[in-house]
Length: 337
Image (cartoon, rainbow, N blue to C red; front, side, top):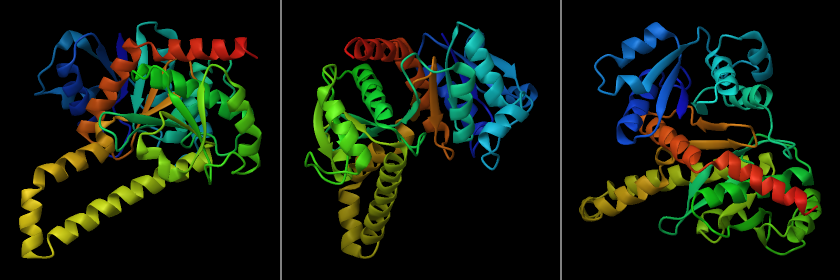
């Protein structure tokens, strides 16, 4: 099993990408890493790092797609970019099972759709982050989180089906599915919600629990939250901003007085645990579900911890046959139509 890593994607490439990926390699057996990017620069970064050399290879790519470029145009104009070269390898090499990148989100999503192709039964792939909840050791998957700003009801029913497969890969036997809305009542929501609500309710292969509000996402009450890409992305960014504000305000309050500093010292381990739980670096990246192979989009500002966890995430989901489970879940849904 080979995992491709975009060595030049993200703000902290290539150093943090390579170090984090090697840390992942050293912590888990059963997979290899192939770095994609300028070979000379990658070799230079690998100097001094300890790892099993037979588990690391390099796929040379001479160009990089930046976040300032128009994704579709860049995919066409830069055939030797790390993203294009990686998807070509992923498409043609059976041993290559997954791709991890912190590069241009648009280019990764466009490239995955055009170069790898969609799974049968998927009209539009979706961006699917795995988020922590207030319940210990429980996560929730949110999709779509930004790949499709405008959606139709069929897209959301497919998101629900794929989300269930992802949740099952996380060990949830009968995932609880909710539709993101502006209220929990059945009749709440916009026109799209009104269209998709009865469709989700009729789907026998999912455990649909009705509407939920954005404040319910991290409660742990649900395993899968379904949304159009615009609403999902707004909810995700709002939660990220709220978490940063709370942690910053908490830190300022602790250091504002002597009693606060003493209390903070006593609760240091608790605060560290909370920060660790809310840190996106610990999850790795967001899955791009609905394409023929596993694609993980790491945050652009990711550092070594995030890349380590993104690579481990790729290895685990490959071992759990996430793409196969999505295909099986979709086949079941199509069979019930």
